Amino acid sequence: MTALPLPLSHIETLWIDPEVTNHPLADTVRKRFASEKIKIGIPPVPDGIQAVKRRLFVTRYRGRLVKPCPGSQGRICCGYQVINAMVHCPMDCHYCVLQTYLSVPALTLFVDEDRIREEIRERLDTNRSHFFRFGTGELADSLVHDALTGFSRRMVPFFAKTPNGILELKTKTAAVETLRDLDPKGRTVVSWSVNPPALIRAVEPGTVPLSQRIAAARRCQEMGYWIGLHFDPVVWFEGWEEAYRGVVADLARALDPNRVLWISVAGFRYTRAQKDLIRKRFKSTPLFLGESFRDEDGKFRYLQPLRVSMYQKLLGWLREWSPDLFIYYCMENRRVWEQTFHDPPKNTRELDERFNENIKRHLKHGG
Figure 1 (cartoon, rainbow, N blue to C red):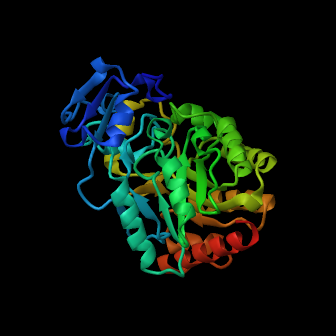
Figure 2: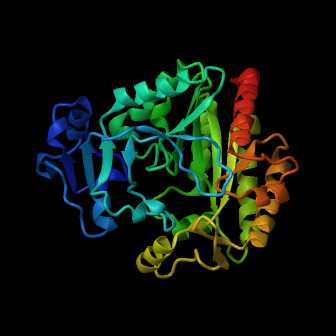
């Protein structure tokens, strides 16, 4: 048994579904745990999110593994494809929607890599002239389990052989060593969620500091990967302008903008149930300082004039860094796009096409 990679060292119990006890992934994971920590069976749903984060469960996924991102009603979305390779996260960001997934019994790894590849191929075959973007970071952090499973290390070569697939690995870790000595051939983007250092310390426990994220992004650029950046969620607080302008300045000092494939921007949003849970778990959280209202999709957001003002300033700082950066909103309405972009996309399909054009342009000039 070798040492567990952080932040998985706090796992108290490894559960293995009886159906997958002989699967190679189950065997790989089992070797990293002492025998007294291993149980064969289906874990019961625990009492509370912290108990979920202290367990790891290896099982099969019953359902389709690669699905379009559901987006949000009335929003312009980007056509992203979600790979369900794992669910839940050992980190504990205050705003994380995964904490409302109380029916999940543990941090869960799925063994179905062959099916994932098959479903990706099926999607790619529907339009060989279009680049489809896939990501593992919607229901979990893409790299937090990687030293344990090696999943991304196997997926990077797989995508390198695809003519029209792009893999995005989203993370708040600096765990990029598993990606070393691979040739992504322009088909993998490693992305980081970025926020001001003080906000990271206040609302993103268990994650690495901004400085380590940026250093890891620079290493990935040097290893030949595209970089993605996600200002998501953008949070209002006293002094937010200076703080976010500092983040952009830190990025500009360290990263080559020509190797940044895309940047997303999205204001803090939440459901009523999510707010109640955040208030219960993090009584002194600074997340709810800005005035919000219930939007047409049922989520609470900052008032639209405030969002527009924040976005205009952030986009301005990013364009000062490089006017050629590809920037888009996640889950924003058309009115906000129109007030902040010179030539906004009219709908989801048009935004997806712009992604396609952006990818082809970057591959032509530096892939």
